[in-house]
Length: 400
Ligand code: MLT
Image (cartoon, rainbow, N blue to C red):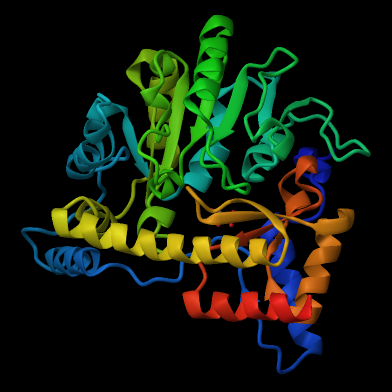
């Protein structure tokens, strides 16, 4: 008897960013003095802001005193953080969220991968193409995606092409689906879904009973206040959408780990199922981390956070400008920390990865790793060190 989950055999190769890390290691193995500049994985490089560090120190001290020590916290998160999130993220944009609908977690990656457990094995999914690979991979593991076809598509998945041709505004699914993943600003294209596009998806979901799984991990990079930051700005979203948010990219928490998911009570049973799931499988985020996250929303914390985000966006602007001045076509980087670089002459994105590494010792992420529509594109992150990124761009200008 085979006791293993054979759906794992359906996954092609390793996880995208593990593949990239392996390629870098191999290169370093043969190039002892390699001076590699990493603009691949979207990992932050600016240190944690002082307001957060101060809150962490204070919380650590509390843990060392009998009267303020905390053991297990609520699985859903402490009220002080749930309320701070609502004030800082939602009330300020005119959105009414109940603290009970906020579920604090240790990362959006885990939440977007785990949420599919709430749905039946035969629920049909739609995912944007290209997009963050976790949505697809977690559904492949659950046996919901079918098998990989020669054209790079999984047989049971509906792909929502998000390309330059449709201005990165995907059409509604062509086949009936029950789950729709959306990501805005999109990882990897760095483009934002318009209010009209989101309304179209919300109306579709409410009409058909589908659920939208909305990943807003990069919302704090949107610089145009008129663009939608949250799915709940869209009328009707509360009856059909779950939203994922993260402190990783907002406040440099990729190593600290803290995020939250909103499951509105209008979703009825789904909300209680997520609560049940979290209570059974998760023991909450540490008190110190939650106090750290709370400090982002103090006046000084928010000012410092905005300054770090502006710094990354300066880097994004520089990447866009420099690549454009070399004659390349680029997208994104205006409301997101990712630049989506169109490769000239139809070069394959993994071939370009190797060429860029060999000629410039610069690492990016091949577009095809995010879906078939990503072929012919390459993602650069603006999260790298600004001066190092400048050097990378200089090398690209001179050597490519
Ligand atoms: C990325 O590079 O796409 C992200 O860092 C991955 C993640 O957030 O897990």
